[in-house]
Length: 215
Image (cartoon, rainbow, N blue to C red; front, side, top):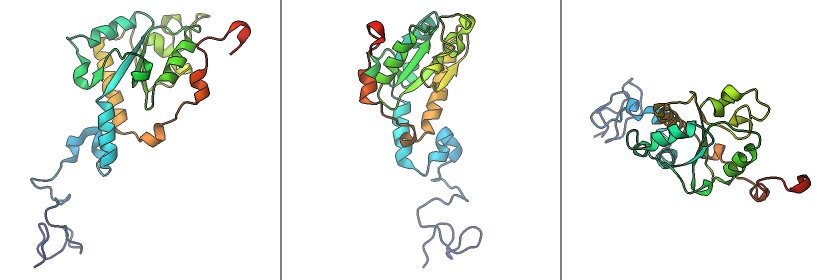
């Protein structure tokens, strides 16, 4: 007796040879044990690679957040982390002890040219894989101060940004939406393609140049 699932004569649903093994759901004829792809959401296209799914699932729901608050948008970040919005329920832990313990940097506020080296330095201290959310108009493009001689025209001029959250200032709900977008991106990414380890020289670089421009 040919033991096949749903096709006792050993033929697939289209009549072609090649039986479906017993106990495995037929994708063409979903039964009670079939996994509906639409319920996987952004993970649907990654279903054939379970190791990648598990690794990305662990990273997207264990984001330690380092808030680089530079101006008024930082107040909205604090509001988003309080009990009313509570983004801990989404797997995001606010107020990491420092950049070396953080997975996610949220830059909120106006980035000045004098502060830019500090932003880049702390970003380089974060372990891979690391992510950045630009929170607010000032961090995105300089905001109302974009034409000032001392303002950097967006934090993406110095470090890579994964998600931009617009607003002046954005509401806490906007930050939650940005976090969800970032989690969708993490679920679909390949870790080897993203990882770029920082050089030892970059980690030893001083935060500010020494007297006379000495490094």
